Image (cartoon, rainbow, N blue to C red; front, side):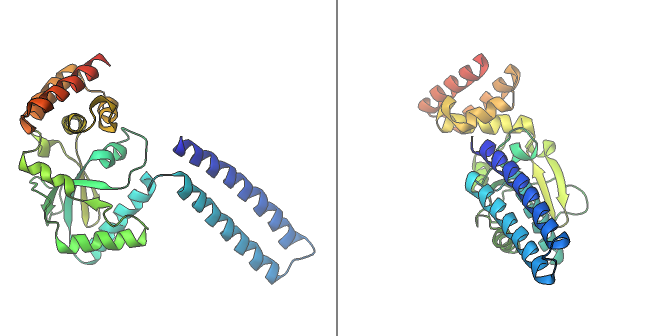
Length: 255
């Protein structure tokens, strides 16, 4: 509901902005008040209207949209390149889904599950645990956060704990890489996201969780669900977890 309201607000605001700007332009440049002061007031009012539109968008959205994150990624790459540094990271979670157009929503952060240090001119082939992130990279993340008014942890490696029990088999070979100057950003493949989202759904609220909704958005086949289930079972051997996992898989296959 919030994204729809934001779109409606922006549309109305843009129409108002164009109507008012045309009226003011007519007054300032063709009417009796044509002078430098009138022109200055015209541009000042236009700037104020633009600010109002931005404020409305921030009021009705829950976090940065895809375009803001795209700009932030470009900026992060530029900061690294200016320092003659480079790093490669792999994103999972909401960011990976959004960047591939698999879901339409906003997110507050980019979850980093893997890292490749000092990548060359070609896409990295070897990845490792992202913890700890290089100091220069952490500093660049903070700088971009301040410049774009993003949360300080807008890019974080908390999900890197997954390395303790392992990633889905063949994960590294299926990463989709894109480059932003000094930053290589890898996005987990849809197949691997099925594994990770199934694990997250069983580990949280089951079929009622947002992770389950994301799993269904990935449109897994029955065979993909069976393969993911085998891997998820290895992540937590507790009987209680196995029961929830069975419920999630069963619900997914029925839907």
